[in-house]
Length: 315
Image 1 (cartoon, rainbow, N blue to C red):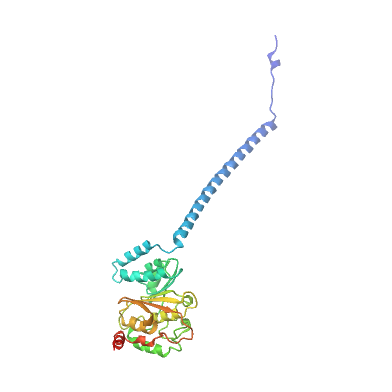
Image 2 (cartoon, rainbow, N blue to C red):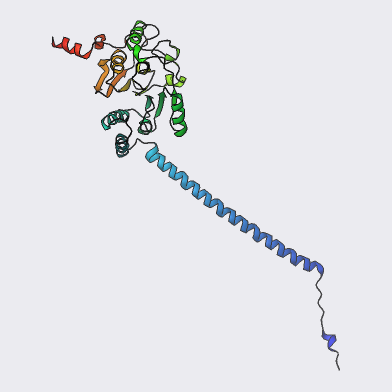
């Protein structure tokens, strides 16, 4: 009888071989984990890059088709329409808004617009002067701060007027006496002591060559109100003192029915420069002048009252 145990073969695995197999599995697991992680990171990065590129492309398209171009006519007309039908008691009419809008549309781009007065139309002027520089000057420092806080895109500054409406004729006479000194038509008002010149505005206001100046402030028609003598005089000097850019400046005076607006308009903006006028809006076009000029108006007889001038011409 044969012993079956003699045919049995015993196979033993060396501990080193067992360790080697386990090590290979660990390396395989590490290799797969690494490439899985790399794949996930690549996927996330690619998705973020795609989104960023898409956003950048959208921004580029937006700036090229709208941001860098003038506002479309339909947008301008819509803005004017809704501004004119506002329930605000002191808003401008459609005709007034349209007249000012037409001036801004003809302005070279970018247009520099200076506005005296923070009013119901403030946001409209900022919007219509798309891509241009728009600066607002107001007599109420608290309201100017409020507007800037509520609308950070608005660039507003306050000014302290030292004039009184009741002193209109005295101030005009005093200014005319100093026309060759402190109240010259061509000068840097930052260093001027002229009573009607505004010399406490931010420095850069005097450095900008303004294309359009709108006088719609300060508010008030009572005797102690500051009146618009200083803004009108300042507008006349800024327009004539331009250093570069377009030689012409459009000056628009709102509430043109007032004595201050008429008298100061005749004296410092000049009737010879008046291209369009109604009871509510006067539109002047002033040209840059030589620094040695000392007359605001070429034809000094333009300061004659309208009725007197008409009577003399008929005779």
